[in-house]
Length: 235
Image: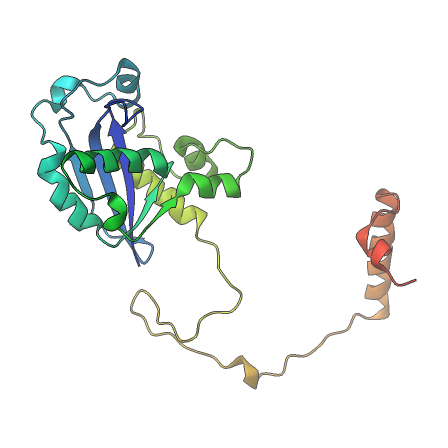
C-alpha cells in the first residue's frame, strides 16, 4: 500500500480569491514505512504572500522570485502522486489549492490521478474529541519530536504528520490475524494451528470467589446501588 503524506504552504487562505501555492512537501509511506522517496518544491506564485501568511511560513517573496511555476512541476508531481492514497491534515484546504493550480493549466482535478484522500484532522477529532488537534498539539500528545518546527514548512510538516499518522493508526485492527497474508518486511510468517491445543478452564476456588464478591459489594456500596451487574442480575 502506497501512501503520500502531503502538505502545502500558500500566499493566503483562499484559492478562489487568487491565493497560490508556494511550497509542496510530500513524504512517501510504503506498507506504513517511510521510504525516503520524498518530493519537495518551492514555487513562484506570481504574487506576494499576505502579511499574515508570511508570519506563518516565513518564506519571503524575494526568495520565491526565481523558483519554478506550478506548470513546470505539474507532471512530476502528478506522476509521483498517481494512484496513491493521500494523507493530508485539513485536506479540503490543500486539495482546493491543488485543484485551482491544475485548473489554471487546463488539467483535470486531483481526484482523477490519485487513489483516495484521508483527512488526518478528521481522524484526530474522532480520536480526541474536544481537544486541540493541530499538528503541534498532536505531536505533543503522541510523542513526536517537533522541536525543529519554529515556522510552518511543507516538507517538515509532512514529515511530522507522517509520524503522527503512524502513531494514530498503529493499533491492532482485529483480534484475528489474516493467516493468508504475507509479512510486509519479507520475513517468513510462521502459522500455528491453535485448534491443536486444548485450553484448560481454571475455575475460581472458594477463597477467590469470596474475595471477588467482597469487591463487588464495595463497588456497589460506593455507587449507592447503581452498579450495572446488580441491575442486570436475575430476580
